[in-house]
Length: 532
Ligand code: ADP
Image (cartoon, rainbow, N blue to C red; front, top):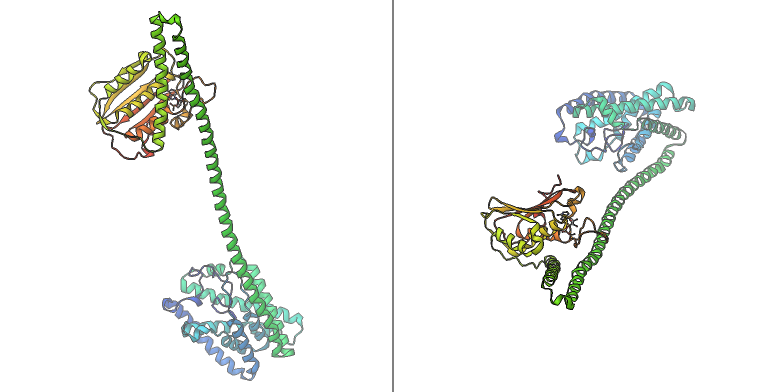
Protein backbone atom coordinates (compact mmCIF):
# COMPACT_ATOMS: atom_id res chain seq x y z
CA UNK A 1 0.00 0.00 0.00
CA UNK A 2 2.56 2.46 1.10
CA UNK A 3 6.17 1.67 0.60
CA UNK A 4 8.73 2.65 3.13
CA UNK A 5 9.57 5.38 0.76
CA UNK A 6 8.92 9.07 0.61
CA UNK A 7 7.78 8.88 -2.99
CA UNK A 8 4.46 7.38 -2.05
CA UNK A 9 4.03 8.92 1.24
CA UNK A 10 2.75 7.92 4.51
CA UNK A 11 3.05 11.38 5.93
CA UNK A 12 6.59 11.45 7.08
CA UNK A 13 9.01 13.85 8.59
CA UNK A 14 10.68 14.44 5.25
CA UNK A 15 11.13 18.03 6.10
CA UNK A 16 14.05 16.91 8.22
CA UNK A 17 16.30 15.12 5.75
CA UNK A 18 18.83 13.00 7.51
CA UNK A 19 17.18 13.63 10.85
CA UNK A 20 15.84 11.03 13.23
CA UNK A 21 12.65 10.77 11.26
CA UNK A 22 14.34 10.10 7.99
CA UNK A 23 12.68 7.35 6.07
CA UNK A 24 14.41 4.01 5.87
CA UNK A 25 13.75 3.86 2.14
CA UNK A 26 16.05 6.78 1.61
CA UNK A 27 18.88 5.32 3.63
CA UNK A 28 22.12 4.55 1.92
CA UNK A 29 22.85 0.86 1.71
CA UNK A 30 26.48 0.94 2.93
CA UNK A 31 25.59 2.76 6.17
CA UNK A 32 22.57 0.61 6.90
CA UNK A 33 22.96 -1.09 10.26
CA UNK A 34 23.00 -4.84 10.62
CA UNK A 35 19.80 -4.86 12.70
CA UNK A 36 17.87 -3.37 9.76
CA UNK A 37 18.97 -6.24 7.60
CA UNK A 38 17.90 -8.74 10.26
CA UNK A 39 14.47 -7.09 10.41
CA UNK A 40 14.21 -7.25 6.61
CA UNK A 41 14.99 -10.96 6.68
CA UNK A 42 12.54 -11.66 9.50
CA UNK A 43 9.73 -10.09 7.47
CA UNK A 44 10.71 -10.96 3.93
CA UNK A 45 11.17 -14.74 4.31
CA UNK A 46 7.77 -15.66 5.80
CA UNK A 47 5.85 -13.07 3.76
CA UNK A 48 7.34 -14.32 0.48
CA UNK A 49 6.54 -17.89 1.51
CA UNK A 50 2.98 -17.00 2.48
CA UNK A 51 2.48 -14.99 -0.68
CA UNK A 52 3.74 -17.77 -2.94
CA UNK A 53 1.55 -20.33 -1.18
CA UNK A 54 -1.48 -18.05 -1.22
CA UNK A 55 -1.10 -17.13 -4.88
CA UNK A 56 -0.72 -20.79 -5.76
CA UNK A 57 -3.95 -21.56 -3.94
CA UNK A 58 -5.77 -18.72 -5.68
CA UNK A 59 -4.12 -19.21 -9.06
CA UNK A 60 -7.52 -19.37 -10.75
CA UNK A 61 -8.07 -15.72 -9.93
CA UNK A 62 -4.90 -14.72 -11.80
CA UNK A 63 -6.39 -12.93 -14.79
CA UNK A 64 -5.44 -9.90 -16.87
CA UNK A 65 -7.07 -7.64 -14.29
CA UNK A 66 -4.33 -8.53 -11.78
CA UNK A 67 -1.60 -7.22 -14.11
CA UNK A 68 -3.75 -4.26 -15.08
CA UNK A 69 -3.95 -3.19 -11.41
CA UNK A 70 -0.25 -3.89 -10.78
CA UNK A 71 0.65 -1.73 -13.82
CA UNK A 72 -1.74 1.02 -12.63
CA UNK A 73 -0.06 1.07 -9.21
CA UNK A 74 3.41 1.21 -10.76
CA UNK A 75 2.50 3.97 -13.25
CA UNK A 76 0.80 6.11 -10.62
CA UNK A 77 3.84 5.77 -8.39
CA UNK A 78 6.32 6.41 -11.18
CA UNK A 79 4.90 9.86 -11.92
CA UNK A 80 7.25 12.04 -9.94
CA UNK A 81 5.78 13.96 -7.06
CA UNK A 82 7.85 16.76 -5.63
CA UNK A 83 8.97 16.02 -2.10
CA UNK A 84 7.01 18.16 0.24
CA UNK A 85 6.70 17.71 3.97
CA UNK A 86 3.38 16.87 5.54
CA UNK A 87 0.44 15.21 3.81
CA UNK A 88 0.97 13.64 0.45
CA UNK A 89 -1.63 12.42 -1.95
CA UNK A 90 -0.84 8.79 -2.49
CA UNK A 91 -2.78 7.67 -5.54
CA UNK A 92 -1.45 4.15 -5.40
CA UNK A 93 -3.27 3.72 -2.10
CA UNK A 94 -6.82 3.85 -3.57
CA UNK A 95 -5.77 1.68 -6.52
CA UNK A 96 -4.42 -0.94 -4.11
CA UNK A 97 -7.60 -0.70 -2.04
CA UNK A 98 -9.59 -1.19 -5.25
CA UNK A 99 -7.57 -4.37 -5.82
CA UNK A 100 -8.20 -5.38 -2.19
CA UNK A 101 -11.96 -5.20 -2.89
CA UNK A 102 -11.78 -7.06 -6.17
CA UNK A 103 -9.28 -9.83 -5.46
CA UNK A 104 -8.68 -12.44 -2.75
CA UNK A 105 -6.04 -11.39 -0.16
CA UNK A 106 -3.11 -13.31 -1.65
CA UNK A 107 -3.74 -11.93 -5.16
CA UNK A 108 -4.24 -8.41 -3.82
CA UNK A 109 -0.93 -8.89 -1.99
CA UNK A 110 0.69 -9.97 -5.24
CA UNK A 111 -0.61 -6.81 -6.96
CA UNK A 112 0.93 -4.78 -4.13
CA UNK A 113 4.25 -6.59 -4.39
CA UNK A 114 4.49 -6.33 -8.18
CA UNK A 115 3.05 -2.80 -8.43
CA UNK A 116 5.38 -1.33 -5.88
CA UNK A 117 8.18 -1.44 -8.35
CA UNK A 118 10.84 1.13 -7.70
CA UNK A 119 13.02 2.34 -10.62
CA UNK A 120 15.96 2.58 -8.24
CA UNK A 121 15.94 -1.21 -8.14
CA UNK A 122 16.90 -1.25 -11.82
CA UNK A 123 19.78 1.15 -11.20
CA UNK A 124 20.78 -0.98 -8.22
CA UNK A 125 20.48 1.96 -5.90
CA UNK A 126 18.57 -0.12 -3.38
CA UNK A 127 19.81 -3.50 -2.20
CA UNK A 128 17.71 -6.49 -3.22
CA UNK A 129 16.76 -7.30 0.37
CA UNK A 130 15.56 -3.76 0.95
CA UNK A 131 13.39 -3.75 -2.17
CA UNK A 132 11.98 -7.13 -1.16
CA UNK A 133 11.18 -5.63 2.26
CA UNK A 134 9.37 -2.74 0.58
CA UNK A 135 7.35 -5.03 -1.61
CA UNK A 136 6.59 -7.48 1.20
CA UNK A 137 5.27 -4.89 3.60
CA UNK A 138 3.02 -3.43 0.89
CA UNK A 139 1.87 -6.90 -0.08
CA UNK A 140 1.07 -7.70 3.55
CA UNK A 141 -0.82 -4.42 4.10
CA UNK A 142 -2.84 -4.91 0.89
CA UNK A 143 -3.62 -8.52 1.75
CA UNK A 144 -4.75 -7.51 5.24
CA UNK A 145 -6.99 -4.79 3.75
CA UNK A 146 -8.45 -7.38 1.33
CA UNK A 147 -9.10 -9.85 4.14
CA UNK A 148 -10.78 -7.10 6.22
CA UNK A 149 -12.98 -5.99 3.35
CA UNK A 150 -13.79 -9.61 2.42
CA UNK A 151 -15.05 -10.25 5.96
CA UNK A 152 -17.63 -7.46 5.61
CA UNK A 153 -18.61 -7.16 1.94
CA UNK A 154 -17.90 -8.00 -1.69
CA UNK A 155 -17.78 -5.75 -4.72
CA UNK A 156 -21.40 -6.69 -5.46
CA UNK A 157 -22.65 -5.76 -1.99
CA UNK A 158 -24.81 -2.66 -1.57
CA UNK A 159 -22.97 0.58 -0.80
CA UNK A 160 -24.18 0.39 2.79
CA UNK A 161 -21.84 -2.58 3.24
CA UNK A 162 -19.11 -1.52 0.81
CA UNK A 163 -18.53 1.80 2.56
CA UNK A 164 -17.94 0.47 6.11
CA UNK A 165 -15.97 -2.43 4.61
CA UNK A 166 -13.61 -0.23 2.67
CA UNK A 167 -13.22 2.29 5.50
CA UNK A 168 -12.19 -0.48 7.87
CA UNK A 169 -9.93 -1.98 5.21
CA UNK A 170 -8.31 1.44 4.69
CA UNK A 171 -7.67 1.81 8.41
CA UNK A 172 -6.20 -1.71 8.69
CA UNK A 173 -4.09 -1.39 5.55
CA UNK A 174 -2.84 2.02 6.45
CA UNK A 175 -2.12 1.18 10.10
CA UNK A 176 -0.18 -1.95 9.20
CA UNK A 177 1.78 -0.06 6.61
CA UNK A 178 2.53 2.84 8.92
CA UNK A 179 3.67 0.39 11.61
CA UNK A 180 6.08 -1.26 9.17
CA UNK A 181 7.55 2.08 8.18
CA UNK A 182 7.82 3.17 11.81
CA UNK A 183 9.31 -0.13 12.92
CA UNK A 184 11.96 0.05 10.23
CA UNK A 185 12.93 3.58 11.24
CA UNK A 186 12.85 2.74 14.95
CA UNK A 187 15.06 -0.32 14.52
CA UNK A 188 17.44 1.31 12.03
CA UNK A 189 17.90 4.52 13.96
CA UNK A 190 17.31 3.26 17.51
CA UNK A 191 14.39 5.58 18.28
CA UNK A 192 11.27 4.56 20.18
CA UNK A 193 8.37 3.43 17.97
CA UNK A 194 5.93 5.94 19.50
CA UNK A 195 8.31 8.80 18.78
CA UNK A 196 8.67 7.76 15.17
CA UNK A 197 4.88 7.43 14.82
CA UNK A 198 4.35 10.85 16.35
CA UNK A 199 6.87 12.35 13.94
CA UNK A 200 5.37 10.57 10.95
CA UNK A 201 1.97 12.05 11.55
CA UNK A 202 3.33 15.44 12.35
CA UNK A 203 1.04 18.18 13.48
CA UNK A 204 -2.05 16.99 11.57
CA UNK A 205 -2.87 13.40 12.59
CA UNK A 206 -6.68 13.74 12.12
CA UNK A 207 -6.42 15.49 8.81
CA UNK A 208 -4.09 12.72 7.81
CA UNK A 209 -6.43 9.90 8.84
CA UNK A 210 -9.38 11.59 7.12
CA UNK A 211 -7.46 11.98 3.89
CA UNK A 212 -6.62 8.26 3.93
CA UNK A 213 -10.25 7.36 4.64
CA UNK A 214 -11.19 9.56 1.67
CA UNK A 215 -8.65 7.74 -0.48
CA UNK A 216 -10.18 4.47 0.77
CA UNK A 217 -13.60 5.54 -0.52
CA UNK A 218 -11.98 6.33 -3.82
CA UNK A 219 -10.67 2.76 -3.83
CA UNK A 220 -14.28 1.58 -3.54
CA UNK A 221 -15.30 3.74 -6.50
CA UNK A 222 -12.39 2.35 -8.55
CA UNK A 223 -13.36 -1.24 -7.70
CA UNK A 224 -17.06 -0.77 -8.48
CA UNK A 225 -16.32 1.05 -11.74
CA UNK A 226 -13.87 -1.68 -12.74
CA UNK A 227 -16.41 -4.36 -11.89
CA UNK A 228 -19.25 -2.73 -13.76
CA UNK A 229 -17.58 -0.84 -16.64
CA UNK A 230 -14.19 -2.50 -17.12
CA UNK A 231 -10.57 -1.38 -17.06
CA UNK A 232 -11.05 1.74 -19.23
CA UNK A 233 -13.22 3.37 -16.56
CA UNK A 234 -10.35 3.08 -14.06
CA UNK A 235 -8.04 4.82 -16.53
CA UNK A 236 -10.63 7.57 -17.11
CA UNK A 237 -10.99 7.98 -13.34
CA UNK A 238 -7.29 7.98 -12.53
CA UNK A 239 -5.99 10.19 -15.35
CA UNK A 240 -7.66 13.43 -14.20
CA UNK A 241 -6.78 12.59 -10.62
CA UNK A 242 -3.10 12.20 -11.44
CA UNK A 243 -3.26 15.44 -13.42
CA UNK A 244 -5.01 17.25 -10.57
CA UNK A 245 -2.43 15.96 -8.11
CA UNK A 246 0.44 17.23 -10.30
CA UNK A 247 -1.27 20.62 -10.58
CA UNK A 248 -1.75 20.67 -6.84
CA UNK A 249 1.90 20.04 -6.12
CA UNK A 250 2.99 22.57 -8.72
CA UNK A 251 0.77 25.23 -7.22
CA UNK A 252 2.07 24.32 -3.76
CA UNK A 253 5.62 24.67 -5.04
CA UNK A 254 4.74 28.01 -6.59
CA UNK A 255 3.06 29.15 -3.39
CA UNK A 256 6.15 28.14 -1.40
CA UNK A 257 8.41 30.04 -3.80
CA UNK A 258 6.13 33.08 -3.60
CA UNK A 259 6.16 32.88 0.19
CA UNK A 260 9.96 32.73 0.14
CA UNK A 261 10.10 35.73 -2.22
CA UNK A 262 7.65 37.59 0.01
CA UNK A 263 9.86 36.88 3.01
CA UNK A 264 12.90 38.22 1.10
CA UNK A 265 10.95 41.31 0.08
CA UNK A 266 9.79 41.86 3.65
CA UNK A 267 13.39 41.48 4.78
CA UNK A 268 14.56 44.03 2.22
CA UNK A 269 11.75 46.39 3.19
CA UNK A 270 12.90 46.09 6.81
CA UNK A 271 16.47 46.92 5.79
CA UNK A 272 15.27 49.89 3.73
CA UNK A 273 13.30 51.14 6.71
CA UNK A 274 16.43 50.87 8.84
CA UNK A 275 18.40 52.83 6.23
CA UNK A 276 15.68 55.45 6.09
CA UNK A 277 15.77 55.71 9.86
CA UNK A 278 19.53 56.24 9.75
CA UNK A 279 19.08 58.79 6.97
CA UNK A 280 16.56 60.66 9.12
CA UNK A 281 19.01 60.58 11.97
CA UNK A 282 21.83 61.92 9.78
CA UNK A 283 19.60 64.66 8.40
CA UNK A 284 18.67 65.57 11.99
CA UNK A 285 22.35 65.72 12.94
CA UNK A 286 23.17 67.84 9.89
CA UNK A 287 20.34 70.22 10.74
CA UNK A 288 21.62 70.51 14.29
CA UNK A 289 25.15 71.14 12.99
CA UNK A 290 23.81 73.77 10.65
CA UNK A 291 21.93 75.41 13.47
CA UNK A 292 25.02 75.37 15.65
CA UNK A 293 27.14 76.87 12.86
CA UNK A 294 24.58 79.63 12.37
CA UNK A 295 24.59 80.28 16.08
CA UNK A 296 28.37 80.20 16.08
CA UNK A 297 28.56 82.91 13.41
CA UNK A 298 26.23 85.08 15.50
CA UNK A 299 28.21 84.43 18.69
CA UNK A 300 31.59 85.06 17.04
CA UNK A 301 30.35 88.28 15.43
CA UNK A 302 29.19 89.40 18.85
CA UNK A 303 32.49 88.34 20.45
CA UNK A 304 34.46 90.29 17.84
CA UNK A 305 32.26 93.36 17.98
CA UNK A 306 32.42 93.81 21.75
CA UNK A 307 36.20 94.36 22.07
CA UNK A 308 36.37 96.27 18.79
CA UNK A 309 33.59 98.63 19.95
CA UNK A 310 35.35 99.01 23.29
CA UNK A 311 38.69 99.72 21.57
CA UNK A 312 37.12 102.40 19.37
CA UNK A 313 35.37 103.88 22.42
CA UNK A 314 38.62 104.04 24.43
CA UNK A 315 40.52 105.50 21.48
CA UNK A 316 37.89 108.23 21.01
CA UNK A 317 37.88 108.99 24.74
CA UNK A 318 41.66 109.28 24.82
CA UNK A 319 41.51 111.89 22.07
CA UNK A 320 39.50 114.17 24.37
CA UNK A 321 41.60 117.16 25.48
CA UNK A 322 40.71 116.38 29.11
CA UNK A 323 42.87 113.24 28.97
CA UNK A 324 45.93 114.96 27.52
CA UNK A 325 47.12 116.16 30.90
CA UNK A 326 46.05 113.19 32.99
CA UNK A 327 48.71 110.47 32.67
CA UNK A 328 47.01 108.23 35.30
CA UNK A 329 43.74 108.09 33.38
CA UNK A 330 45.59 107.63 30.10
CA UNK A 331 47.49 104.69 31.61
CA UNK A 332 44.28 103.08 32.87
CA UNK A 333 42.56 103.46 29.49
CA UNK A 334 45.58 102.12 27.64
CA UNK A 335 45.59 99.06 29.93
CA UNK A 336 41.91 98.49 29.23
CA UNK A 337 42.63 98.79 25.51
CA UNK A 338 45.42 96.25 25.89
CA UNK A 339 43.07 93.80 27.65
CA UNK A 340 40.44 94.17 24.94
CA UNK A 341 43.17 93.73 22.33
CA UNK A 342 44.39 90.57 24.09
CA UNK A 343 40.86 89.20 24.15
CA UNK A 344 40.47 89.94 20.47
CA UNK A 345 43.81 88.36 19.68
CA UNK A 346 43.00 85.19 21.63
CA UNK A 347 39.69 84.80 19.84
CA UNK A 348 41.24 85.34 16.43
CA UNK A 349 44.06 82.92 17.27
CA UNK A 350 41.56 80.30 18.41
CA UNK A 351 39.59 80.69 15.21
CA UNK A 352 42.73 80.40 13.13
CA UNK A 353 43.87 77.29 14.99
CA UNK A 354 40.47 75.65 14.61
CA UNK A 355 40.54 76.27 10.89
CA UNK A 356 44.10 74.85 10.67
CA UNK A 357 43.08 71.76 12.61
CA UNK A 358 40.03 71.30 10.36
CA UNK A 359 42.20 71.50 7.25
CA UNK A 360 44.82 69.28 8.92
CA UNK A 361 47.46 71.96 8.55
CA UNK A 362 48.34 72.64 12.16
CA UNK A 363 52.13 72.95 12.37
CA UNK A 364 53.58 71.22 15.43
CA UNK A 365 57.20 71.97 16.28
CA UNK A 366 58.64 70.03 19.15
CA UNK A 367 61.27 71.56 21.41
CA UNK A 368 62.47 71.65 25.01
CA UNK A 369 59.84 73.16 27.29
CA UNK A 370 60.22 74.10 30.97
CA UNK A 371 56.66 74.08 32.21
CA UNK A 372 57.25 76.55 35.04
CA UNK A 373 58.69 79.10 32.54
CA UNK A 374 55.68 78.66 30.29
CA UNK A 375 53.30 79.21 33.22
CA UNK A 376 55.13 82.37 34.25
CA UNK A 377 55.04 83.78 30.74
CA UNK A 378 51.31 83.13 30.35
CA UNK A 379 50.31 84.43 33.77
CA UNK A 380 52.34 87.60 33.25
CA UNK A 381 50.61 88.10 29.94
CA UNK A 382 47.27 88.26 31.74
CA UNK A 383 48.16 91.70 33.19
CA UNK A 384 45.62 92.79 35.86
CA UNK A 385 43.74 89.47 36.07
CA UNK A 386 47.00 87.70 36.95
CA UNK A 387 46.41 88.71 40.54
CA UNK A 388 43.62 86.11 40.86
CA UNK A 389 45.85 83.23 39.86
CA UNK A 390 47.61 81.27 42.62
CA UNK A 391 50.45 79.41 40.97
CA UNK A 392 51.83 76.32 42.68
CA UNK A 393 54.24 74.75 40.21
CA UNK A 394 57.43 73.08 41.52
CA UNK A 395 60.59 74.06 39.73
CA UNK A 396 61.93 70.52 39.42
CA UNK A 397 59.33 69.20 37.02
CA UNK A 398 60.56 66.94 34.21
CA UNK A 399 61.49 68.79 31.03
CA UNK A 400 58.92 68.29 28.30
CA UNK A 401 59.69 67.84 24.61
CA UNK A 402 56.61 69.31 23.01
CA UNK A 403 55.24 72.32 21.12
CA UNK A 404 55.57 75.25 23.51
CA UNK A 405 53.13 77.49 21.62
CA UNK A 406 50.36 74.89 21.48
CA UNK A 407 50.77 73.85 25.12
CA UNK A 408 50.60 77.55 25.99
CA UNK A 409 47.29 77.79 24.11
CA UNK A 410 45.95 74.86 26.15
CA UNK A 411 46.98 76.56 29.36
CA UNK A 412 45.68 80.01 28.47
CA UNK A 413 42.29 78.67 27.34
CA UNK A 414 41.85 76.78 30.63
CA UNK A 415 42.95 79.81 32.67
CA UNK A 416 40.69 82.05 30.60
CA UNK A 417 37.70 79.79 31.38
CA UNK A 418 38.56 79.56 35.09
CA UNK A 419 38.68 83.36 35.35
CA UNK A 420 35.58 83.78 33.23
CA UNK A 421 33.35 81.27 35.02
CA UNK A 422 34.23 82.26 38.60
CA UNK A 423 33.28 85.47 40.39
CA UNK A 424 35.75 88.35 40.52
CA UNK A 425 37.77 88.27 43.67
CA UNK A 426 37.86 84.48 43.97
CA UNK A 427 41.16 82.73 43.43
CA UNK A 428 41.98 80.29 40.66
CA UNK A 429 44.68 77.71 41.34
CA UNK A 430 47.22 76.53 38.79
CA UNK A 431 49.20 73.56 40.01
CA UNK A 432 51.41 70.82 38.62
CA UNK A 433 53.34 67.74 39.65
CA UNK A 434 55.59 65.18 38.04
CA UNK A 435 53.85 62.13 36.63
CA UNK A 436 56.46 59.53 35.67
CA UNK A 437 58.45 61.04 32.81
CA UNK A 438 55.71 63.56 32.13
CA UNK A 439 53.67 65.97 34.16
CA UNK A 440 50.11 66.50 35.35
CA UNK A 441 48.83 70.06 35.71
CA UNK A 442 45.45 71.43 36.76
CA UNK A 443 43.49 74.63 36.65
CA UNK A 444 41.01 74.94 39.51
CA UNK A 445 38.38 77.58 40.12
CA UNK A 446 35.66 78.21 42.68
CA UNK A 447 33.12 79.29 40.13
CA UNK A 448 29.72 78.27 38.82
CA UNK A 449 30.71 74.65 38.11
CA UNK A 450 29.20 72.38 35.46
CA UNK A 451 26.06 70.23 35.85
CA UNK A 452 26.83 66.51 35.55
CA UNK A 453 24.66 65.98 32.47
CA UNK A 454 26.58 68.71 30.60
CA UNK A 455 30.01 67.25 31.24
CA UNK A 456 30.10 64.91 28.23
CA UNK A 457 29.22 67.78 25.89
CA UNK A 458 31.49 70.63 26.97
CA UNK A 459 34.36 69.39 24.77
CA UNK A 460 32.15 69.46 21.66
CA UNK A 461 32.88 72.21 19.18
CA UNK A 462 30.58 75.26 19.47
CA UNK A 463 28.95 73.80 22.58
CA UNK A 464 28.05 76.25 25.31
CA UNK A 465 26.01 75.34 28.34
CA UNK A 466 24.18 78.64 28.08
CA UNK A 467 24.04 79.63 24.43
CA UNK A 468 21.14 82.09 24.84
CA UNK A 469 21.53 85.61 23.51
CA UNK A 470 21.21 86.90 27.06
CA UNK A 471 24.01 84.72 28.43
CA UNK A 472 26.18 86.15 31.14
CA UNK A 473 29.57 84.95 29.92
CA UNK A 474 31.37 85.82 26.73
CA UNK A 475 32.81 83.05 24.59
CA UNK A 476 32.26 81.20 21.34
CA UNK A 477 32.09 77.61 22.54
CA UNK A 478 35.49 76.91 21.01
CA UNK A 479 37.94 76.91 23.92
CA UNK A 480 37.56 73.38 25.29
CA UNK A 481 37.15 71.67 21.92
CA UNK A 482 40.33 73.40 20.85
CA UNK A 483 42.10 72.32 24.04
CA UNK A 484 41.04 68.76 23.36
CA UNK A 485 42.22 68.87 19.73
CA UNK A 486 45.54 70.44 20.69
CA UNK A 487 46.15 67.81 23.36
CA UNK A 488 45.41 65.12 20.80
CA UNK A 489 48.24 66.59 18.72
CA UNK A 490 50.55 66.80 21.72
CA UNK A 491 49.75 63.31 23.05
CA UNK A 492 48.09 64.62 26.21
CA UNK A 493 44.72 63.91 27.81
CA UNK A 494 42.28 66.07 29.73
CA UNK A 495 39.67 65.38 32.39
CA UNK A 496 37.28 67.46 34.39
CA UNK A 497 36.01 67.28 37.92
CA UNK A 498 33.20 69.70 38.68
CA UNK A 499 30.31 70.47 41.01
CA UNK A 500 27.71 73.15 40.33
CA UNK A 501 28.29 76.29 42.46
CA UNK A 502 31.42 74.75 43.97
CA UNK A 503 33.83 75.06 41.06
CA UNK A 504 35.68 73.01 38.46
CA UNK A 505 39.10 71.45 38.09
CA UNK A 506 40.48 70.68 34.65
CA UNK A 507 43.38 68.23 34.82
CA UNK A 508 45.80 67.67 31.96
CA UNK A 509 48.27 64.84 31.67
CA UNK A 510 51.23 65.51 29.38
CA UNK A 511 53.74 62.91 28.25
CA UNK A 512 57.45 63.72 28.43
CA UNK A 513 57.70 63.66 24.66
CA UNK A 514 55.29 64.60 21.92
CA UNK A 515 55.62 62.24 18.99
CA UNK A 516 54.63 63.66 15.66
CA UNK A 517 51.86 61.68 14.04
CA UNK A 518 48.24 62.04 13.02
CA UNK A 519 46.23 62.47 16.23
CA UNK A 520 43.69 59.76 16.80
CA UNK A 521 40.30 61.03 17.94
CA UNK A 522 40.17 58.31 20.59
CA UNK A 523 43.39 59.48 22.21
CA UNK A 524 41.45 62.12 24.00
CA UNK A 525 40.15 62.49 27.55
CA UNK A 526 37.41 60.35 28.86
CA UNK A 527 39.30 58.55 31.53
CA UNK A 528 39.45 61.53 33.83
CA UNK A 529 35.99 62.91 33.20
CA UNK A 530 33.81 62.88 36.26
CA UNK A 531 31.61 65.17 38.20
CA UNK A 532 31.85 63.79 41.66
P1 ADP B 1 33.22 79.15 25.85
O1 ADP B 1 33.82 79.97 24.78
O2 ADP B 1 31.73 79.23 25.85
O3 ADP B 1 33.85 79.32 27.17
P2 ADP B 1 34.39 76.51 25.96
O4 ADP B 1 34.53 75.48 24.88
O5 ADP B 1 35.66 77.06 26.54
O6 ADP B 1 33.46 77.64 25.36
O7 ADP B 1 33.55 75.89 27.10
C1 ADP B 1 32.35 75.23 26.80
C2 ADP B 1 31.37 75.41 27.95
O8 ADP B 1 31.85 74.75 29.11
C3 ADP B 1 31.20 76.83 28.35
O9 ADP B 1 30.16 77.45 27.62
C4 ADP B 1 30.89 76.75 29.83
O10 ADP B 1 29.51 76.64 30.01
C5 ADP B 1 31.53 75.46 30.28
N1 ADP B 1 32.80 75.72 31.01
C6 ADP B 1 34.06 75.67 30.54
N2 ADP B 1 34.95 75.93 31.50
C7 ADP B 1 34.24 76.12 32.63
C8 ADP B 1 34.60 76.41 33.99
N3 ADP B 1 35.85 76.56 34.39
N4 ADP B 1 33.59 76.56 34.87
C9 ADP B 1 32.32 76.41 34.51
N5 ADP B 1 31.91 76.11 33.24
C10 ADP B 1 32.86 75.99 32.32
